[in-house]
Length: 114
Image 1 (cartoon, rainbow, N blue to C red):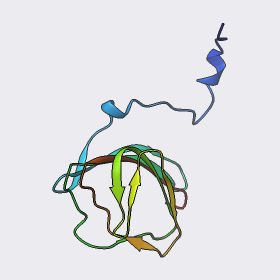
Image 2: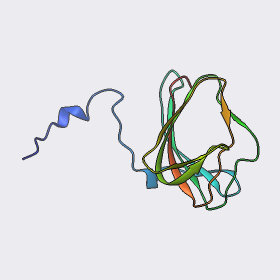
Image 3: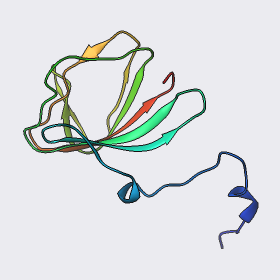
Image 4: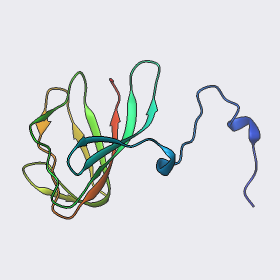
């Protein structure tokens, strides 16, 4: 049996969001961002949804800090190779890629430095 600990949810800063309830922001044709969380220091997390055939129109440069990417569904292409669902990528500060997908994909993004 799973224990119930209501004090967990009472902890300051502890949140839970349902991705489908988050607002959708169109970034480029076929590319949408669902912001999930933003911390007090600027760190933030979100879901990036890319339709089949979508491509970022320019280099995506990671500044001021790194980008952490987890491929939730579909296949992500960074401009060099394909990454299937279940892949984790770390892009250090100052690095870049050109996000694209032929199949469509959903990515979990985390920016620890804002």
